[in-house]
Image (cartoon, rainbow, N blue to C red; front, side):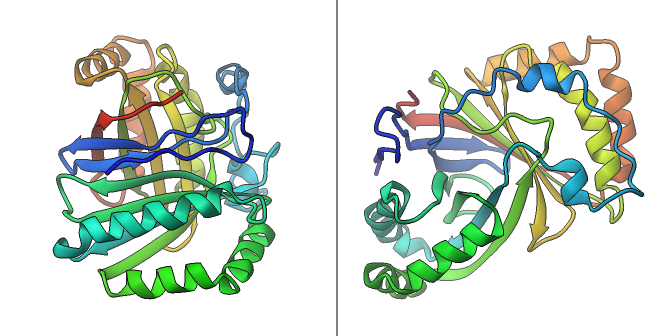
Length: 283
């Protein structure tokens, strides 16, 4: 099933995309709902200062200062026989929360897994205003009878669930609508404790090598939930374009060195998810 939703700003169209993923690959739906310009993101990445890990908390050193957005990433493992019903009730309820100005939150994306972990749903929410806004939304949802019924019905369809609260890296783009069609790749990394600042310093420089085709969608690091996690989201026209862009990066002076120095900070193997839209309208 497919659906689209309208954003809080009626002038902005919010797509919901169904994607097929390859290799920890996903069958996902993706929605972007904030079209605030970030034309200066690439230019800012050229002048990112090196962060001194002794000066402040990771969240203050690495996150964006001009916004206070908090993200929630949800993973729901659905009973195989319930996936269609699960998607249906999500389509009926979640867009209403996104569209209602009473709830200061944004449904950035919602997906179903295709390959890798089967029958998994993933949702990404944005709370502009940080923890106070998250608390406000949660308290309001407790009073929402429709949402209470949704949660009760959903609980009978799930095997397990978990979530993470994330912040955006200051040197990454904010997820916004883009012209399509595209495929999307989510690359997740678990870092060794104490190496987040080091990762941020390397990628503040490395991102310069990956902006030529506007492929960088968003970069996040965990605050609550599974710690020391990093998620990078990329967009490509198709799989061949993805391969060409990634191969081209290796011919740029400095890219190989930066990749080499990020390897020691990784704790576990990376998780890669590549996606191809089946039905979509991105702008």
